[in-house]
Image 1: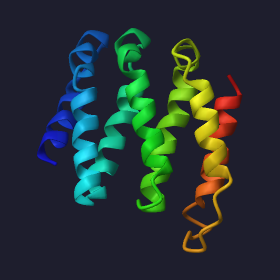
Image 2 (image 1 turned 90 degrees about the vertical axis):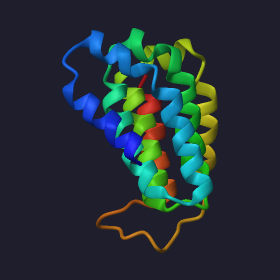
Image 3 (image 1 turned 120 degrees about the vertical axis):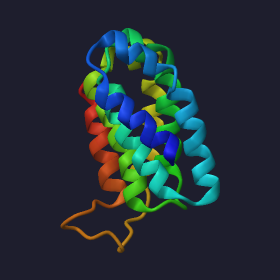
Image 4 (image 1 turned 30 degrees about the vertical axis):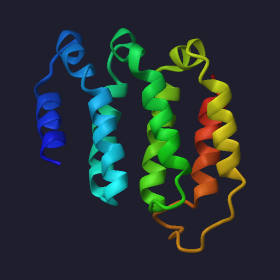
Amino acid sequence: FQALRSVQALLDLMEGPEDMAKVSSLIRPIIAVCNASIQLGDEDILLMAFELMFEIVEAPSKIIGPYIADLTAFCLQVGQNKELDANTRQQGMEVVSQLGRAKPKQLTKAKLIPPLVQALCAMCAEESDDTADDDYQLSTHKFAAQALDTVAQF
């Protein structure tokens, strides 16, 4: 948890692409921490990591390029994990949507569109969970449909 806070503090101090290049090498370790937090059942760490990922996704393409497949695969894994809270799953799909808006050419070049569409279609077919509060939280199939819509636009 402290490590993610440290990375967040670093990101806050970053001013340009050169600085972001230094942080990009931390993407895989961040994903490893997230996987460990899933095993421990600590979704707060995941939510903090997704905040970092939103900022990292905005980095120039050459910086995030080598990690885009890992980042996409991890976010899809979280989105498809029915054991996680709906909000956590939604945040994973939000990162995927952000990747779609910010890096559509890279997703296409990395041949990530077919697995994205397949995973999102499967999530769209999930039964609606009545625990989602319609005013504040979308059900799984609705946020998957929104992410699919974003992917379809490129």
